[in-house]
Image 1 (cartoon, rainbow, N blue to C red):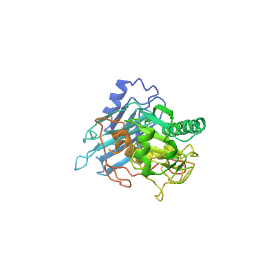
Image 2: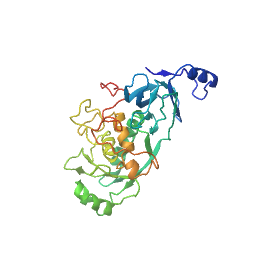
Image 3: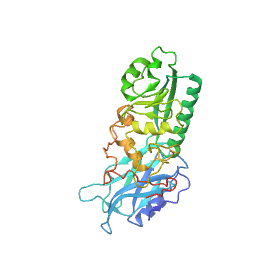
Image 4: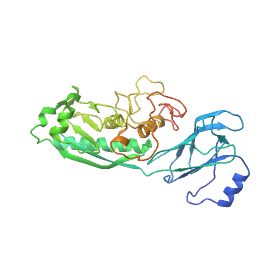
Amino acid sequence: MPVTAPITDKTTVNAAWLVLTLAACDLDLVSVTNAPDDRAIGIMVDGVDVASGTVVDDSTYDIDAPILFLENLRSDAAGDSEVVVFTNRRPPALLDPAPWTPGRDVAKVQLSNELGLAVTVWIVKGPFDDQRARAIDACVTTSSIWNSERMGAGFSTFSIKDATGDGEADNYFDFDCSMRVDLEDDIGRDAGRINIYYVGTVDGGVGRGQACSIGSDFVAMAERTGDELLSHELGHNFDLLHINGLADFDQTNIMHNASSTRSFVTEGQLFRAHLRSGSALNDTYGARPGLPLRECAHTAANSKCPGIGKRIWADGTFPAN
């Protein structure tokens, strides 16, 4: 079991107490900086337990202070070791390699500030005021899910443009993905960001959406879509696939393909959304320059890729694992 430092003021650490504590044991330490105040911090750790020789793979800790004492770890035979940190309003942070040796070590993890994403919404089929309100509701719901589920990203701008008067607009009221390029050419597209188009139907349905490809910078939304659907389509932009049929998932996950109760994202999904090169966070926004990438397949689970269902915190009825 981890030993957490009894610190009540995150801005102050009693240096003498810390030195004495470290001198009294062989525990390794994870120190997190730039964590938000009064938010839980989740940590996944890889290494090898020095005492037992047991491989530690994505061992998880949920703490309420920016300092965590671990068992004494070392790198494995291949030199692999790492620490991943999750918390609200900060992108996941990967420290690879972690500095584990048979002695006492301190792994220092610096969290980045929340990623700000500019988005443009085009109202193609009106009434404009009604669809503008629908888009705003979707923005609010998506922001709420991202905030509570530690996405580490938010909308810096959510610009809404009235394209209902465009002479080409009615060509795209009944949208399918074969129309994407023409829609962008005729209606408009802002480069370097995700563009969202509110049309009439998508693939024949008034409640459907389409990203048209995994990792795209495009979303089409039909005229009666639920507020939570935007989080799903943006998940596709972030290189996430459907989770239907996978164990430990149900309709409450944002990547279920048919739901009105989407609200949860696993840490395994967050890891992929931020670290896969094809995610719009990387190839559209360039929001993580110089930071590590991991091309973890959808259902991969190994020393470099936490399983897609890996959870530090419970998601509804699904416990932490």
